[in-house]
Image 1 (cartoon, helix red, strand yellow):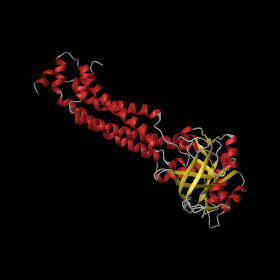
Image 2 (cartoon, rainbow, N blue to C red):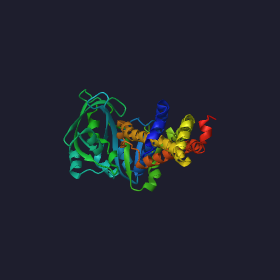
Image 3 (cartoon, helix red, strand yellow):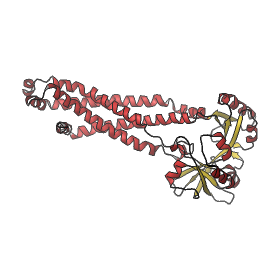
Image 4 (cartoon, rainbow, N blue to C red):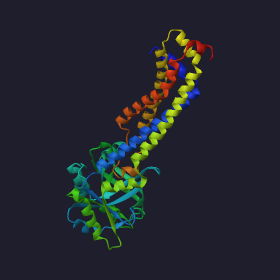
Length: 392
């Protein structure tokens, strides 16, 4: 601790250079924390979606509506245990910037399909007898400050991609919260489920259409076979379907972006590699400018080893302090950025920077400081007092 004054004096010798270097390190570790957090979130999505559940959508495009009449035929496929139609009402809640998505389903069938969703029996019964009722995820309930019995007014923008106008000529929808649900990963209880029949019957146009079907199956090993059987039912119709396991569907969406893990690691690696040169250059310049001062310290009795460790400590303090700030900012910013209505409507909650990334990041910061600080530190160790003070 008694050497902190010397370290601080060295860092503030050129405050602009120190601040710019620190800002670069903060930015690099902010990217490291954020990207690794997204990577961990995607891995969590794949883990949660590894369930015996299929999604049936239009083969033409994902947002093209399908006829409700397909429901009865899908139920006849061997291996299917439950089916629910699904529509999506997109609306504004209280302000023009507050977008919310309400998913219309048959809640009884949905709970048979998504067995990790837990709803109290009395709340399920209330949902089934209340046409305007909704079951809301605990996470959204806490974020909005809602409670069972509250009403949710929405000004509809669209339903399944088309106008959300009701039979009364308005686009104003009101839902009553009759219950909540939980899932194993608490932060991901983010969806609002309404009764499909209520939304469907209230529409002025586009009735008896669905955005897709959720399908429960008895044997996950037969997922591909059952998917093909469902698609074969409508192969010669004008409403052909594409049926996929939920996990396969999500992977196909991610594949359109590319290998996320490779991209994340590539970006982080490139940033840290560039940062290594920047930090090494900063430390080398700092030591070159302080040759006389280091020689004076040796004259006053500082050993070669002590001078070397002072230079290394300077690199460690700069790197670790900036890395902590960058990781802290990533930890605060990532949940805010990823907490979107679109993700919430898919049951995907805010992503977080895993604790392991903080430990990994600090380890990288120490390694960065040692690699960039060791060459100038060894130069300071070998410094000859007479040569340094003579200016040679």
